[in-house]
Picture 1 (cartoon, helix red, strand yellow):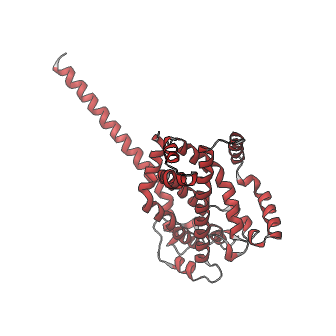
Picture 2 (cartoon, one colour):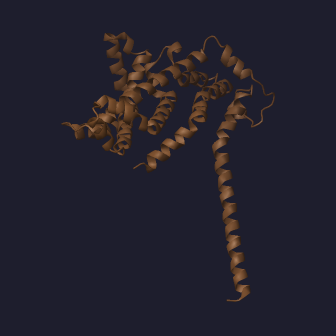
Picture 3 (cartoon, one colour):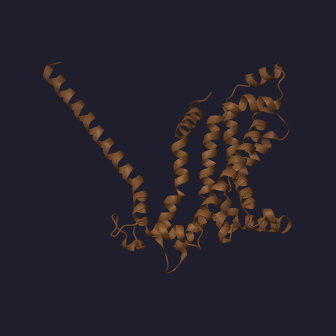
Length: 296
């Protein structure tokens, strides 16, 4: 093979690599723009005093913080009360979800009892129906429960938390059980030989090994609850009890008074807890996802 042929092939390979690199860069730029454009548009709307999406500009004229002032100083719409309600409900739901899910998954993974497979299949079957299909039933059940136990009925955070728990338990139990099944049972048997009971095995040995999946499920549960709208809008009708997602909808629900700028300002502030969680726990999130993918 002559030197000219070798040089020609080398040049062709170099051109193909250069073309592939250019295509990857173009694709990366398109995806980045596609991802951050809605955020940029919301930021632009939040500092635009016009409050009109039809005339919205990417770089608004007379930009300022008027929308943030109106959001914070509005005595009729208590934004920070809504924000606190969302954080409180999400944290409590996440803690209870992790506690109940972990113990249930431990029972399904480590114990053998009558009806175990049937229960697992029932949980999976029930989970296949979204809560949205049962919204009327959830409203009716909550109303009837409230007639007996007022603290768990409509317009109560406890009642909303119970509904969220019922919707989140099923799939999380399966995820937790699948992860727990990869932990060798030799750990349990060795601990039992040394005199440990089931609770000690669970709390001292198994639970520390579940940290990656606990972080992932906890974050997903928090985000799902924090951003939920339909169920919270149905079960919470009193303004001071509503969550931030339901409260912000008021700014865009009027036929002639749609304050998109104030809504955008509230959306940016409401997104801060999620951003903080991702920034603080990003290493645990990546570790939990990768450990769950290759464990065992």
